Length: 203
Image 1 (cartoon, one colour):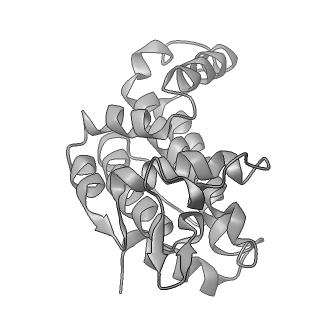
Image 2 (spheres, helix red, strand yellow):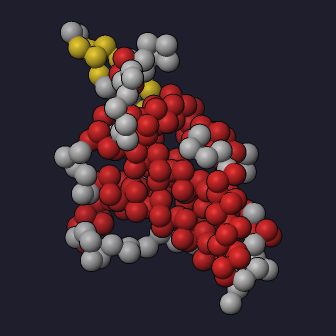
């Protein structure tokens, strides 16, 4: 049995969507973990696109061999370096650069990518220096007598969904892989609709 490009792209895309759904619904009270799931979701969606583009490297292989090849491919795409990964995708999807250049509250897309990279680590391990105190990279936003922690900002989700929307559209156009509800046993239909409305920017 041979694997198809659509199967591989769908598998990676769905894993990215899993991360987005987890941070959107079950983790409402665990805001500090949001950067982890947003970073992971966007990383997997970027890799879904790049793996689809590199189909010639696995499409003639057996299912098991193709899985091994696609796993190696995924690791080769700037592993856990989100800014580099997004830049790589932007070479084929120019609209990605437009999304990155825009502002989402206090931060532009490029700064949010940096926050997600640092927040991904901070959400997993006790940090030596929390993101909100990182003066060198200027993540700090002062509000009267206190500082805002950028890892808790709703700008992270707004940006991540905006950039994913562009990439998912390209995935559907080029590789015919579509976003579908696989969570009927895990979340309510209403939660899925709310999630989809935000992801697709439907008002």
